[in-house]
Image (cartoon, rainbow, N blue to C red; front, top):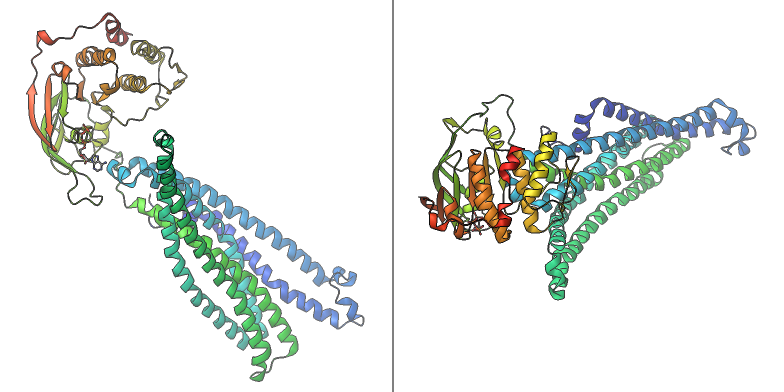
Length: 581
Ligand SMILES: Nc1ncnc2c1ncn2[C@@H]1O[C@H](COP(=O)(O)OP(=O)(O)OP(=O)(O)O)[C@@H](O)[C@H]1O
């Protein structure tokens, strides 16, 4: 996002400077007309006072006045105010809606281009809150802008009128307004902290809701756990957050309402105290009091809108926090990687974010060289660092040290995105998309259908108009569908993180004895994280991990005695035929 640390106004300005300018000018015009209402009404009253039947002329709807020039002007002005105010509000509202929709898209793109470890560290709940709650609050604050403009110009106009009536009174009122604004900074400063705390708690609530949905099966079986969970993770943080917001709102409203009081103080001072020091004609006092009563509304309006603006500022701050995260972009010009035969890493390492730990897990430097048409197994105990290493090999995580090469081409920020396109992975926490999200030919469709049969998914889901009709399948079937999508993508490098873990014995052996050898034949580089020691002889090479370090690499000599015979059903798997289609 380019508009770093943008304010709410600059957010709208960057979206459409012309429209914003027009709406501000129209809003200002509306405010200027507003400020003329009182002087015009007073001069109307003064004009009627000079007539013989002045008593009846004070009636505002008197036919004489209505037909008079001032009356016409008055009502035309009211009509203009209605039109200009509405137009300004509608225009800014439209800009705000479009600008915040654009902001949402920018945030989505930002998340998409952020480094993966930053996305993991921020977490789903926080990102979701930014995309929903924060963006909406910014939109709310932005729509308050035209009313602030109308009110500000009205106040300026009325101050001009006061200056015309009496310069001393003008300075007294001006000083009082500045004093009021100065005093108002205290509550505004106080609520910033409260709103920030309330906003932080919303992330906790969002996380709670995530657990409520994804942990529904566990919670359903344990009422006490369920009640405690809802109380601690949702109800309590929500109560705290609402309480903080209520206090913040109350402080702002209280301060806003006190502005009425301030204007009454000024009125009292001008009516009862000032005449003792300066000469103030009655007619002038009358106009001044009316003007002051009239100013109170816009002042209170602006102060009231400050609550919305403050909440918007807090939300915008959270959005800006995303901007501190680095982006990874496809460069305009770069060395693309086309043909390659060797993929090698030299001294790559990684360390997770501290997250309160003294010594977070770190992967010690690893050097390995892979070839096309080679099947590699990575094995080791739980937590030994297999997945972490695979995320470095798949170029999802960026190594803290070392170098990575495709043949002699070293991977840099410039070409890493091209290298990533050569890789397909299925991690243990993969996401299954229902659509392929790429152009597909009739041949692709035939291939998909052949794979659906080969992977035992025919009749479970269908491929129609680029969609899989359903992904509501068993765990093992979903994983097979993920494999199907990966195979259709036809990448050079495949990384499977415990893919076969939840497959039945039949498909386990299909995977190790049919799919992997066929991929080898197709010259793919395959890296498989596995605990299936029964099938270790299906690899060309086994890489051993222990405590975050690579401890051994063994070439495998296929032993004839351990070859696993495919059963009749296993033999039905026809990947060769699929490839032929
Ligand atoms: N997202 C994360 N944030 C912080 N630490 C993590 C994260 N993921 C893993 N770790 C740490 O890294 C260590 C290695 O995890 P990794 O997933 O690489 O192990 P693994 O060998 O694949 O284990 P398993 O066989 O259980 O899948 C873990 O012990 C854990 O402490």
